[in-house]
Structures are given as structure tokens and as C-alpha cells.
Length: 578
Ligand code: TEU
Image (cartoon, rainbow, N blue to C red):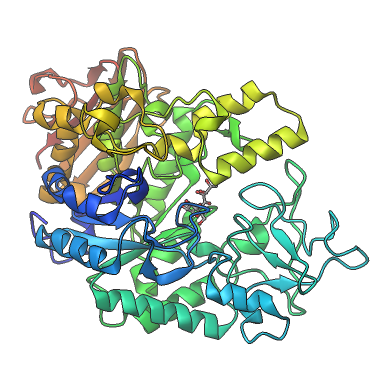
């Protein structure tokens, strides 16, 4: 880290986290899949960017049905990525550069190949039977027949959330794919095994965890062991949310985890929860320091605003007023005792420049505007690999380009239901498939963008010839250089780290405006979310000592009156000293 954080604020108030999706970051051995030694080759790039923490998406041993989010051994590395020794070397290389390492923790479910599950499924009286959610079929229904599932829940990856297992005549629960059975956290032995595994990783020297769907671990189980059906909103299945999200014991489990795993480590580690379906009220409970659960959580509200009633693949345009209202609510709601994790992109979301920006004519302007708005909020910003280069969506036009299990299952289900044409399915995949974020990082203009000497596991975006790290590192005014400046700003400026947040112009349809203030100093942040000039009427003149802190156009500070003209996708941060 560049600067010491102020004593009162936790270290991560002035930190920026960088997410690596190892499969697509850098290949070192020519098999077309990124690996740990590949990441090690790029640590100086990360140091140059200036990030404080690296979060590694899963590298554990896994059959890779969901690219590592299906773990078969929590205490080993998948040979695709390397060895435990490679991980230790990478951790040391990052630590030497002052960069912390956060591991992904996927403990709502395991792989169906995990020993715990193979033992569990082997017999009804297996000592591990109760480590997962086994249930008989619905009363009066033939086991294994459609509709015989214990509840009507749909899985998040299409199809039912229960899989019938002939060997013992019961069903097991899988909120994700059938290769990802849900662990039964009601069983104390499960929790103890997970805590022991987490302690083992801390002892190995890692600096925290990003906890996958951690608010799914407590199910809403009735006293008789049954689980509730969910409302059927769209499609053939019921929504499992009420029975599975933010369940009755989730806070108890996290507080227990704090006591069992993090006692004595509390201030050094970073704990960020991935929490779909979480409201501001829940977010506050998770991140309130006094409750000792998590440091911050990823909300999904601001990345669901372009989603129609049919769910993720049902697309509608973003209304900027919704985005401001949503992020504004999270800023206000967590102002006193909670903390926000700030993100646009990750390995599950389409690229933000293609989504809320313009990846054509104004790619550079819109990417830097979006970055400015995000990084100036109160919270800890996350940068997903390639976001700092304004990498775009994949723009795939045929089904055989896709690799992601969620996308492929969605295609299969949609074709089976027959409501959509192939062109319609392809159009929604092109907008929102997770593979948009998973194409290889574009390092330079050489073959395969410098990602691999072999055949990449997923196509490289052909725009790598112009959009790549080598070009941007060298160029003033590049998106990469702009991200560096934003990161330096967070390191250096207490107003960015700790200032209060006030939303301005909430009804302006195209301008995102807010201020941050601390001890009389105010930062005014303006972002134009359109490809046209926009006027921001602030109602009061800015003082005459204002200065431009950062912006993505060259504008002299003296032009800031009560009304500011913003050029297409322009971002401005203006300081008014106290
Ligand atoms: O994702 C959880 C999640 O709910 C979604 O973001 C999901 O990816 C999907 O897009 C919903 O439509 C986490 C991981 O980030 C994701 O990669 C995994 O596939 C999933 O959990 C299961 O482990």
C-alpha cells in the first residue's frame, strides 16, 4: 500500500481490490488455460496498476463443471492451475510487492466429486449422509418422475434444484448445477470441517476470503425437516429465494465462523461476501463491524436493473434514475456502521463498458466515466481483470463459442420450452452471458493477445489488436493510466476514503452527480451517462478556489460555474477546499 490509512478507518477503506479469473488471465504452459505461474509472470503489472489486494477466483482441485466453483478438494490446487507450491510462490511474489491475497471460498456447495459427497450419496446410513440435503420425493408422487421433487424450486442454472439419486431413492438439493450439491450447514460437523479448512489457509499465509453465495448457507427448514415451495414467477419452477436466501441462521453461522476462524486475525484479513438477493437492511447486518460477520458484501441490485421480469436473460435498457436511486440507497443505508463493496464487473457479469457505457465510438470516455463514478463512491472498489483496459463483451454470434455452464443450460432449457427463436437466445447471450467477461486478458498484439502459445479454451476477442495492455501502459490518456490515477487518488485522499456521500440531481436523466465531504472539504463528482452534451445545473456557484482532481477530458478548472456543461460520457471530479 502507498499510504498508511488513517487510524480510525480500517485498512481496506483506502484499498482497491483486483479480481483475477485464473483460467483467463495468463497461461504459462501452452495448454490454453491460464495458471498460477502465468499470474506470477504478471505481478509487476499488478504492482504498476497499484492495487492493494488480489482476489483469486477458485484454483482448488475441481472437475471444472463450473470453472472451479465446484470444488472436490479444498486443500489442493487443480493441476490445470499448478500446485500448492506454485500458489505459495505467487503469494510470496505478491506479498513482496505489498499486495494481499484473497482466496475464493465456495462453501455453500461442493462438487459432486468431493469425497464428502461420494460418501454421503453411498448409503442412507452413511455417516456423511446428513452433510448434504437429502429428501424423499413428494408424497404420492413416483420418485424420479417430473414433479416428484421435494420442493418446486428451480436451480439458478435452469432445470429443477433437486436431482434424483437412484442408488438410495432420494433427491439431493443443488441450487446451482447438479454437479454442485448444497452442503447442510445445519450439521455442526460440516461447519467444523469448513472452519478447519479455512484456518489451514490462513496459516498458509493468505489474507482473506471472498465468500461465494455465502447468504445461501442457511436454509429455511421447518421443524419436521421439510422445505417450503416457492412462488412460480416465470418459467416452470418455483423461486427458491424465500427458502434459501438470508435464511434464519445465516448471521449466527457467520458470527460462529468469526469466533472459530478469525479470532486474532480480525484486522488483517479482508472478508467480502457475495450475497445475491440482499437488501440494504441485510447488507447492514452483514457489514456492521460491531456484529463481527463480514467486512462488506456485493449487492446485486445495481446489476439487475437492466433485467426484465423473466429474469437474467430477459433484457431491458438501464434507466439511469434507477441506478442512482439504488446505489444512493446503499450509500445512505451503510453510511454509519456498514461498508460497501463497489463493483461493476466480475466473472459473472457482462463487461460494463458494453453494458452501461458505449463500447464503440466512446469506449475510452465511457469506461473512464464509469470508473470515476464507481471509485469515488464510499466503499472499497473492485476491478475485474481487463476492466482497467476497457475490454468489451465478447460479441459472440454462434452457440459453439460459449463455454459457460449457466449459458449452455439456459440454451438447452430455452430450446426445450420453445418460446424463443435461436436468434433471440443468441441475442440475450451476447448481452449477458458470463462468457463475456471470461475471454482471455488482452496483453499485447501478438498471437492470442499474448495470453497463450496454445489454443485458448475460449476465443480471444479479435479487438485485442487495438485494445491491449502493452499499448495502454505506454500511452498517456489510456484507460489503464486513468485507473492508475483513480487508485492513487483513493490511496492519497481522506475524502475519497472516508467522506460522507450526498446524491445530487437525483432526477437528471443523464447525469450522475454526487458529493463527498470531510472536515469542510468537498469533492463534487459528475458523470455524463450519454453520448451527447449535458448540462448539470448545481444551483449554487462553486467557490473560486476549486480545482480539477481528475477528469477524462482536458478542461480548465476555471470554467466551473453554477451550471457545468459535460461532453459525451465526460467525468469530472472537482475539489472545493474547506
Ligand atoms: O455466483 C452466484 C450467483 O448467484 C450468480 O452471480 C450466478 O453466477 C449466476 O449468474 C446467476 O444468474 C457465484 C459465482 O460467482 C459463480 O461464478 C458460480 O457459478 C456460482 O456462485 C456457483 O458457485
